[in-house]
Length: 279
Image 1 (cartoon, rainbow, N blue to C red):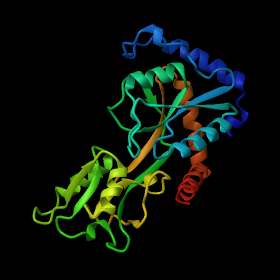
Image 2 (image 1 turned 45 degrees about the vertical axis):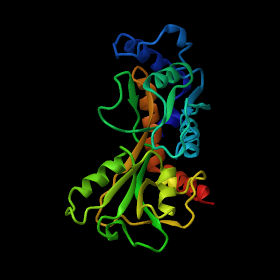
Image 3 (image 1 turned 90 degrees about the horizontal axis):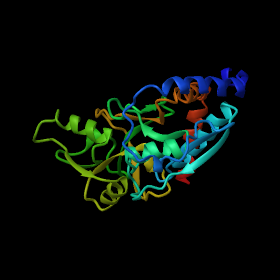
Image 4 (image 1 turned 30 degrees about the vertical axis):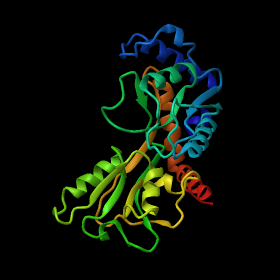
């Protein structure tokens, strides 16, 4: 396999030449004072550094995947734990600004894990790898009450997380229902609140991102996942952010992700992560 035969000398030399060519391209970088930009970490010697937000739904999984990717590239792996200015458990997004993301990719790490793949959302100075995780939005109800999402009664209240892809697609389904039967969308900022309102009988169901259901911080006592029925809900695709000038890092990670996906390692790691959190 490619990463089993390419030497570190070739990797570093190729990266250096590509980096020099990319430096000449304007990428609309953030207007930040140079005093905040300490160093460029790009593949420091034989080490790759990943930024990890442990407070996310997949923080532990991200750490395992980062290690697997580094091992595939024959690189040592270091992790920088991201500490945002505010921590809100149960959010599907990482609570940092794009300027902070730029600073971290300049000062702290070569790559930032856990970003959702989306078109026309990120600035030109940033690029994303292929997805290393594709996890669905699922329907959660109180145990034994409903067999699937489409079996809820008319005008049932359904908790969503505001402006997530699950929220947007569920709302699109609501628009197809007759007005007298249309489910009532009740948006919340976090999955923590979705589960609380479900246990309190304030809503009949919740649309949540699958990794949250087995997360150690979530209380899902008396709740269960049921099929979505005729309601189509999306998969959320997660990749790794790098600076656009660091295209060699991105392409190297892409090939490593492809290899781990092809041999089933990523799927096994995700399944084990869900099982471990559920215990």
